[in-house]
Amino acid sequence: MVKTAGSVKSARKSASNRVFYLLIAVVAVGAITALTYASTRQRGGTVTSPIDTTLPKVNSQGYVMGSPGAPLEVVEFGDFECPQCGRFTTLTEPDVRAHLINTGQIRYRFIDFPLDMHRNTWNASRAAACADQQGKFWEAHDALFDNQDKWNSEATSNPDKVIKPLLEPLVPDKAKFDKCVDDKATQAKIQAHWQIAMARQVQATPTFEFGDKKVEGFVTYDQFKELVDEQLAKSGKGAPSVGGDTAKKGVVLPVKPGA
Amino acid sequence: MTKRMWMAVISLLGLFLGLYLTLFHYGYIGSLACGVGSCERVQTSTWSVLLGIPLSLWGMGFYALMFILAIAGIQPQYADSRGLSLAMFLLSGWGVLFTAWLDYLQGWVIHGWCEYCLTSGVFVLILFVLSGVEWRQMKSLETEELTAG
Image (tube, rainbow over all chains, first blue to last red; front, top):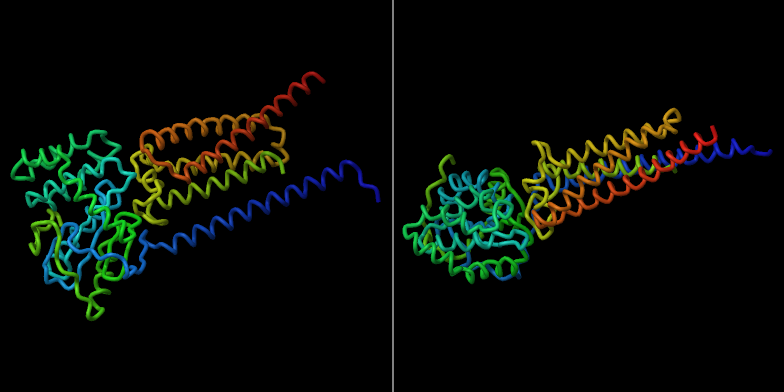
């Protein structure tokens, strides 16, 4: 049988159409499968994993809030310019303070982990450490996160100019605070915080350590409470000794307004 | 496969990429943490929203329109439509300009690169080249027809 030029052309066109529709189907099925897998694998946007017990321990680094007798210590590695850390501080932390820290169930430790991708975060960490010299770390912590959009690298290239007037009303000695910020007097301390985060293989902020578990990313209060309950249920888990380079050891701080 | 078919396939890929980033934006997918990469930083920056709508959703709109035009273009009744070719060429040209602005923001304002946004940029560029070549061919055909006529 002899094929005409028209029938050959038509057959090619038909084959081309088949390949096209097959390709469209493969792309659609593949993409939907991948999206479904991704959405179920990381429900709630958090990643929980066990902590390697051979890593260097957190001893006296960071800032501590809560009772020294609390049965569990939760550690946050945070970055003042990280949007998800800000979201956690604004949405979840008021409940954590009211229901877990102030009730003596947990002690809370914040350790700076300023990420390279955030240009102004070192300035914020240094300023918070300067406020800590006057016993006002947590007040500075809250003010920095509440006003993140005013001093972050999208808002200004001169963060100290915004951060200083923001934190000055919180500290008793304004001149001492300003000098501390201008001299970058707390740089070494923040570097030490950064080093312990690196030593504990922290990859992202916020990262929370609940006993032998590590959680990356934003967590809701319910998720936080669940992780605390799980650790408290494990018998014989003593919290590490309270060190912390804040003067607030064991002092239960007031809950943020609106908490 | 014709150029319009390839444009439909690439538009569909772009559509799913936009869907992934939109789900990420609303917290349904991915790790919402500030990590070693810069994608989260770009996606959570103030530039990730335009007129109250996430850029990824605008992107989905763009790819959906390109997909519809490409699918229409492979139907026999529109196979020779020069208007459709011109519409795809202009739309993808606008996409290239918009992508260039986004790349400028990533590199010089946000100081971070999102690999998904860059992938989308490559898709837009391919769509622009394919639609440009096709539009030129259509124009040549038109000239030939006029000469023959």
